[in-house]
Length: 526
Image 1 (cartoon, rainbow, N blue to C red):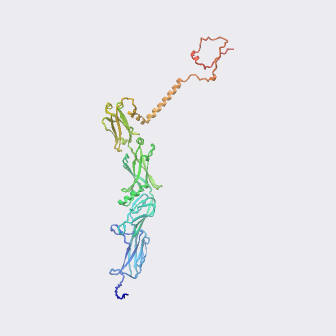
Image 2 (cartoon, rainbow, N blue to C red):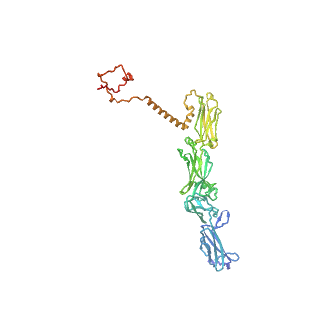
Image 3 (cartoon, rainbow, N blue to C red):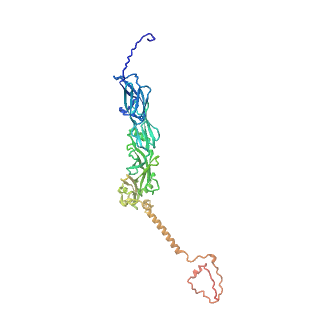
C-alpha cells in the first residue's frame, strides 16, 4: 500500500535450482589489431576474473550460496587472489609461461580448469641486443578505438620515441620497455643490452674518389650482419633519421704514409650514417676541395687511406680498420700555354696513378694546335709527357688565337681545361712569359736543381783555390818594427867590390822597389 492510497501488488518469481556448471569471464576486454584473437595474456598486466554459475538450461544464477575455491599450478607465472566479491578473482601476470587455474565449488562438486598462457605483447624478440642496435618496436594491443599506446623505457641507456616505438641502444645495461594503453593495461619487456666486442669495416662501395662522387664504407658492430631489429614501417624509418643513431659511431681517416705536410681530414671528409634499408651503419667518404699544392703531392706518390671505425663510450672495443686506395686524379705542371712565332711548342708533364694515366685523354679544341705524347713513365712518380705545338710554325705570324686544351680520364671522371694562346711577338728576347715550360720543367726536376747547385759550389771553390795560388805574394810580409834605416857608406878594410859588378840576379829596379829588406853591414875578418 502506497502512501498516496493506491494498493499495488508485485509478483516476483524466484527460481531455485541446482548449479550445473560454472563459467569464468575476464575483464578488461583486450582489443587486437585486425580483430585477431588474443593468443596469450600480456606480461605485466592486472585483470579481474568473474565466476558465473549456470543451471542445466544455461541460465545464469543471480545469487548462490557457493564458496569459491581456486588454485594455480605455477604461482611464479601468475599471482591470483580474491576479489571484492565472492565470485571474483584478481590475477596478475608475472612471467612468461603456461599456468593452469582451477576454480571449484565443494558443495555442488563442480569445477573448471582454465589454461592461462602468458607471453610478451611487445615485439620483436629482444635477445642479444648490443650497443648501437636500432629496434622497431610493435605491439598488437590497441584500445577500444583501435589506437596504439605509448612507449617508454626505465633508463636513458635505451633512447625511445614514445609515439613511433623506435628505440636506440645508447649504452650497456638492463632496461625495461613499457607499452601503455591508457585506462586498459600497461605491459612491459625487460631487455639486456650488451657491450659489443668489435667494430669492423666490412665493405667498400664505389671507392672511385673523384671530386664529385661519394664513396661508402659499411660498418659492422658486433658479430651480426645487421644492427636493425624488427620490421620498420615508413613512419618509423622517418623517426630513425630524426633520432640520428649514427652520432654514436665515427670514422677516422689517415694516410697510410707520412710523406705529406697535411692531414687526410683536410681533403677527405667521413660522414657516418644509418642505412635503414640495409640495417647497417655506413660512412660516406667525400673528397673535399683539393688545392694544387696538395694535388701535386698526392699524384706523385702511391696513396691509400686507412679508415678506422669507433663507437662512442666503448673503450675495450676491438677496432678493425681497412685500407682503401685513393686516386685523387691527375696533376698537370702547366696552367697555361703561350705559343709564339719564336716558341712554337712546349712540353707538359702530367702526374698521377698508373691506372689513371693509362686512360688519359688529351684533346685540342682547335686544329691549329696539335698534341702528341712524348714519353711516359710508370714508376714513382708516374707521369706522361705531352708536347703541345703549332700545326704550322707560320700560324703565329698570321693570326692571334685563344683555344683550350682538355685533359680527362675515364678512371676518375676528372676533366681539366688549360687555355692556349697563340700570339705574334717581334722580339725573341722578350721575357720567358711567352714560354714558361722550360723553367717550370726545371723546377719540377728537383734532382737537376740539386746537381746544378752542387756544381756551382764546386766551381766556386776551385776558382778561389786557383786565385790564391797564383796571385798571393812570394815573400813574407815584414813588420815595420824590424826594418833598419840605411846609414851613410863607411870605408871598409880589405878588397872592395866594384859598384858596377853584381852577383845577384835581382835587378836594380827590384832593389829599389824593396825598401823593407833587412840591411846587414859587412864584417872584416879578424
